[in-house]
Length: 266
Image 1 (cartoon, rainbow, N blue to C red):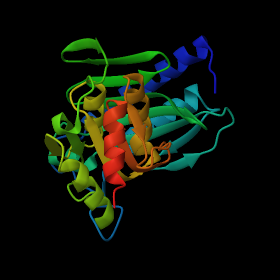
Image 2 (tube, rainbow, N blue to C red; image 1 turned 45 degrees about the vertical axis):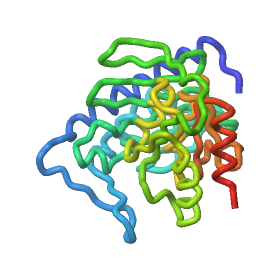
Image 3 (cartoon, rainbow, N blue to C red; image 1 turned 90 degrees about the vertical axis):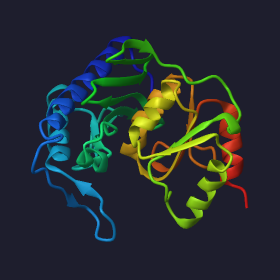
Image 4 (cartoon, helix red, strand yellow; image 1 turned 45 degrees about the horizontal axis):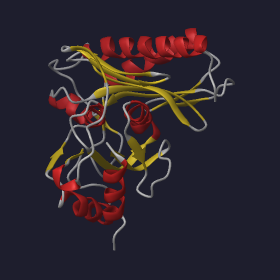
């Protein structure tokens, strides 16, 4: 979907307004005594807090005022239909386990998309006040070190690469075995960064992120930011992944191809 320069500016401004509101809401409860969490699932701990809900409520209120014609897909309150052909995809706290633990590796994810995928996205880390944005002609980070352009790392082999995922036990047993084939050939493997891993890839710090079982709201903002920085994000078959599922993000085509080969080896 093509957007005019004027509408692009409005979408970017709205996305930043959403991230600003979510930053304030999440910091009200971060590292505060007495913060508790419910779990969304019975077979494993999948937490949600008052901060998750407050963050999304405030973002939805801004959209109701500024962009009532747009659809919304949010983690905590589900879908709202729209008429414009655009959808705001919101994850009010990506990495609630990290949020509960007091680590500054969780984030707020904001994306605006059409039927083909995300047009613009923000990965915001409220506590360290670092914001990564990409799409609609923008690719930059603004934070404690100032403002800088985003660009992925130069090409390198898998044996030289840094690989991230959130959980050591990636997805199903079969998915975990596929991940292990890639991890076994990488130079360095790290865990537990949630959306911040994707931001680090866009910033040129790491080379690969491989995950499974993601939702649209987990991945649409990272797709926009990484692609704007020159990287690649697909599913494990090399196809579009903006609806979620198995995600492979890479800094360059050769590394992406090698990871795909190992993920699909038998």
